[in-house]
Length: 172
Image (cartoon, rainbow, N blue to C red; front, side):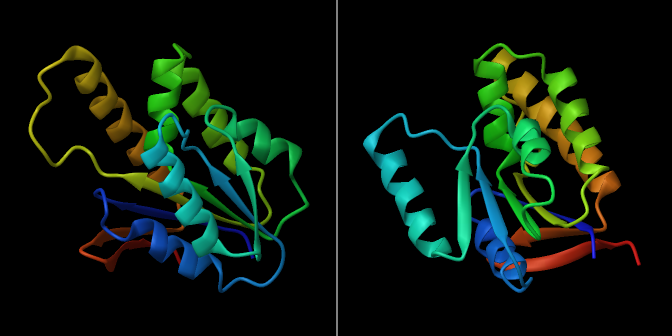
């Protein structure tokens, strides 16, 4: 059964762990779309730790920019997708001077075609102070808009805080 499950929370809230646990309950072929890039040793270690935690039951595509293309080209090959995370994807788009509005619309459109369950992880970045610089404010605003758009089309939405998932939407 096709479902879009959106999991949002702050940094180190447990959102990725919760998403992985829930997605792993679905039988079949599993694809993990990772948007992180390893620019330094610390990030390389984080990525390796995530890979080990997933185990061999998940195939991984490391794609910092073209997640829509991954969805299109792997259609029908998997029973569940987990995309982690949208805010890293968004920052990658901004840093590579991509048209974020176009990319977001293409991504959302690609989700309307899926015939499997998709778990999408994102950070909630709008609960803090107003950033002092233009790029940070632009990122915060775009992340808020992106999160709202994904929540609107999602069947289920969870907010994860302190490792505790709270269901905030259930479209039954």
